[in-house]
Image (cartoon, rainbow, N blue to C red):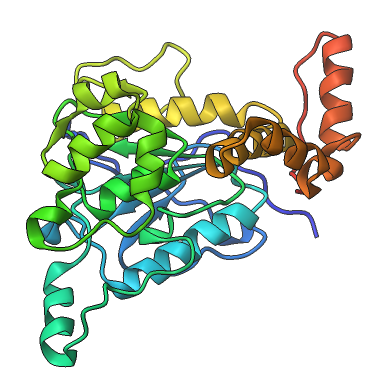
Length: 321
């Protein structure tokens, strides 16, 4: 049965005229448009601000978007659905209010320690904190870090997000040493690969805040987006009044405009070397892996080459990877 395509323009069900950097409207595409319905979750709002784009807004602003035990499982289900849904190509994650994510729900953790006497940290799914910090996945995810990005929130960005945009107010920190715990969700070894051993040691052993500008100099952030940033002239219409998310959507659409197969396999090639450590071993795994074998000579590869020869825009089909 044919699926309903994305409409040419997605309208907000609750448009906002606010210029607040945390004003994010909810957009709706009818569930029948998807091959499978999106998971139901109370910890985040799922919206679809443009064709092929999933926007996940962490929504516990009263708790600085801390994630509790159930929240990890629910977010993992969201990202697993995103990876398998052919009508979605790029994900964006941001936070509601003044924080991106301040990490684990320490109140819940304290209750667990007090009542059960257990010293273990809250359980997370195999894909890690918020379903992201140890995620392998198929499709790219952009972090739009709008404020405090602490502890597990920082681990989500370090381990699970392929590109990172930040507001000038954003701060990054691994403050676990200040409260007698350890960042165990996967960020420590990954952080050293991104920013280098000495900077990773400084950040993790002091627990200090790293500003958005400093994080960009270190290579942890791709770009800092000032609130007065104007969207690109060809940017997709977005009425959220949120420059950071608008820029993230523009970046996501730039990626989504490419072959979905090529994006998946290219991301896998970079991730292999990053995760496994050997560039040649990563290349060999990429060439011999299932993704490239399926893509090689496939519909989108043939269409891309044909469109180039015919000097026209390619008409990509849903990825079969």
